[in-house]
Length: 145
Image (cartoon, rainbow, N blue to C red; front, side):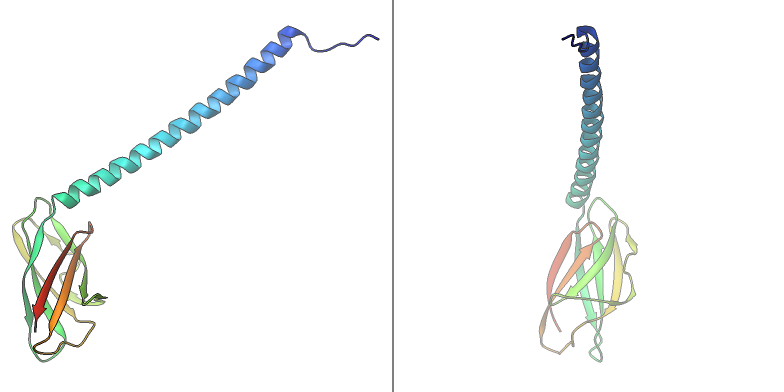
């Protein structure tokens, strides 16, 4: 019986090609993966730096006593400009803003934010007002009507 197989040279070339293709694929995958992880790290780091440099406080709350409309004054004393993205009254998100939401508050400046409270305001009651910036920094105050 005369059997013939592939020669050693051809088999070596085929193995080298398979290893080269696999190595190229692994290199391309790992490069993309590492770049994606690096981009995500930089984005998260930038957000954390912005959050640590962001400082604000609610300096006053005004209520007319007649309805559920509230006016809060936010003072930005941090290193970054801020935007008020959300307000919560006793844990319930405010949905009806009249002015001040998503408006840029420069450093060392005051901004009024007017909204209708999602819950009824009763004179003499205490309320927890939470203000959230666009970077996710929160300021909580307790206010008595």
